[in-house]
Length: 300
Ligand SMILES: O=C(O)CCC(=O)C(=O)O
Ligand SMILES: [Fe+2]
Image (cartoon, rainbow, N blue to C red):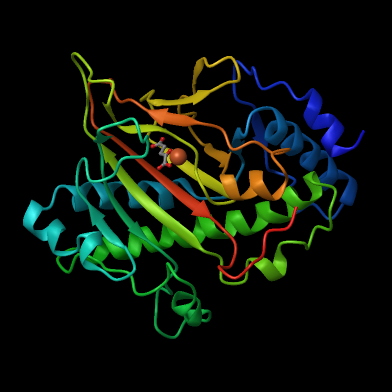
């Protein structure tokens, strides 16, 4: 069956989100990689979201990024506002509560965030030129009083970018195209990472103000870490039901964005999702958005 025929039969009235084991992601056996790609293909056509386990990113790397992020958000507001994203030419840095609004019908997203892109850990590291490419590139900004935050955030960033680079060939296989299709299109990958802090939102909720309003992501795909023990992320199925996407320890959520949906003529789905944090606790999450190089032409 062709991809397009299969898409016609795709069932987007999903009730749960599949979990895919990545232990074979670099298997030397092409048949094994193809079997993994088949699972990814089903998830991409039917849901647009899946969890990945055995992804290779160390718990310790995640833990350090989380604890450092908590220290960052706990800084005095004046310090955070010194690196506000509106003050930087490349939109990197801090964004305060309600400064963003993903759902055009919403009144603002109840979250503060910190965003940055590719950066070598040390000046001498190879690949330094990557940060100077593309419209959304340009120097990151970091809080001067918390040097450990930069190190922990970049360590996490580099680990998850490596995972993203392994996923591109699987997406290619899942599309029945050459495994190397994305190689020359993701050399200076436009990978932006955001660290998000959602305050708790118990009590009556103004429907127009939630953690992040209903939206789709706009890059190729997102690799999302969410804090264990807190249900807040929801994904919309074709029957307009909100399906919970709870955090599963040891996994990341992977979801497709508009770029890959558009590129595949919507055979792969970019699925609407939102966050409402009514857990009684503050919540942290870390999405890393993977695009292609900024000069890549999207042809179906
Ligand atoms: O915090 C989350 O779980 C999801 C965040 C999200 O959807 C986004 O930043 O695009
Ligand atoms: Fe999103």
